[in-house]
Image (cartoon, rainbow, N blue to C red):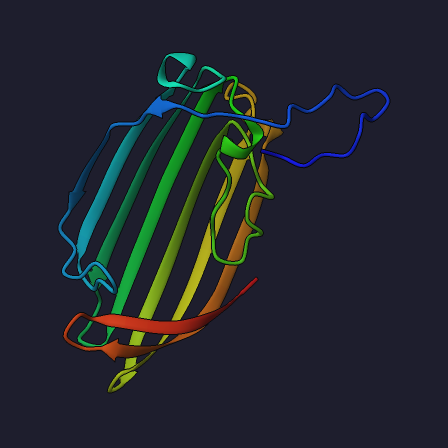
Length: 180
């Protein structure tokens, strides 16, 4: 439910209530050595989402996504992670269900479109005992007409971060990133 101001001249009234109902089967493959802070392995996930009044929603639309991550040990103390994903949508997609670029340093939901593609790379250096530093960079694009990709909105991001391993038995790190 959305709280909206009264009618604005020249704009249609916004419905205050919206229901989404759908079926989104997902298939995934995971060979990462650790789900929290992996050093090697791969993760791939594909989702095909079908939304319709038959499933209890108000609108009929589709939203499909593919995510791929690869983690590569470069030395005993340095590892690299790569991520690429794409999401496409069609039909009467509610504005809050449109795909958006989701990269460190990019404002959430600012770069939306019917279709989105993005890639990010990260290098982590385990510098001393439980302490590590990371550097990362990403690129994302969002557009509304697949035949007119020249109509896209793009963003390049980057930054660095610090990590501390709080649970060695689980390979669980916590930290802070500074991104732009």
